[in-house]
Length: 411
Image 1 (cartoon, rainbow, N blue to C red):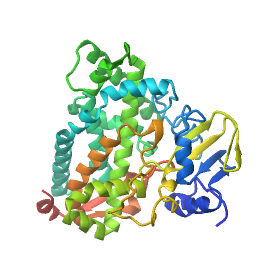
Image 2 (tube, rainbow, N blue to C red; image 1 turned 180 degrees about the vertical axis):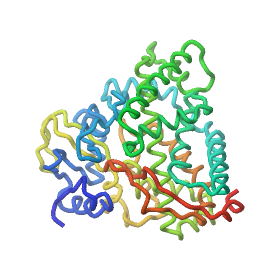
Image 3 (tube, rainbow, N blue to C red; image 1 turned 135 degrees about the vertical axis):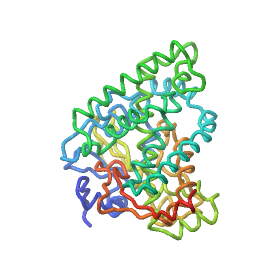
Image 4 (cartoon, one colour; image 1 turned 90 degrees about the vertical axis):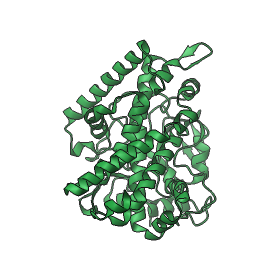
């Protein structure tokens, strides 16, 4: 295989791992001339760049302004949501905002969400069982993998779950690949409605604080007399909605596909449910929901003998780094008992995902339910659709069928 990176080709979309391996072994700091960005494919190099935000800036957003749509045209990778704080900030602003946000989005708050996550998953499974009884069409993404994180984030923010239709419209129309089911006007309308809806909730919380909601906690967060600004709280709320929902949805759908293709691993989980957390961790490494994020060079720099110029865009390919044989033993083998769990799937350095504990919790709860249903499930890959944007790994839709006999087993 020559040094090539067919970023938007069907061949790459179907199986990108051989291209990553070739780059790691032959040209780990590769300039993709056709697309105008550098591809960083080895674990140690990605880690070095992630830990140097002064040289490799996040200001252009997670897609570096270079994410292409299905027609190959460049798109605003923030989906028209505007500037997203934290993920697009560099120090010192990033330090200030992360410190304040951490006072609201605490490990204790996330741990206390477990009963709510279990309740939401239980209700979704009950609804799924009813659809099975009724003989209705089923879709893994639409019926479970997507609504679970949507409703969890909504409850954390203090958005009434009774407004399910509104919440699903926000999530579905803003998701990657939404163009298939929503017109541009509908997508723009949903973005506007989401901004207005979140602004109203923030305003109401400011005048009438709600106990134990994340938005009220963000309003209360202070450090040395400084609070988060209203526009920052709005931006952080959008970021939580976009990043939190998409990431967990992809993790769940990818995990289901993997288990159906690897019944031996599914059997291990069914025999010992304490392994579910290990499964989630290895799934993050093996097929993470985010293949990589972009950075912009802030100065001219020589890296591994390559001259990177100020203003150049670099794609830090997390998923490739997670398969690097110099870092992991037998990296292309899924190992439920792998000792080295220090992967890049959730980032590293100052931009390490603050929602990582929540994503892990949601996925653990999801698979505690799903492993009983999976032996009775079939997925219709022919009519399914993968996410069309090559920075993410997951599914937009994945029709499924479930044997009615599964209801007694999975209840």
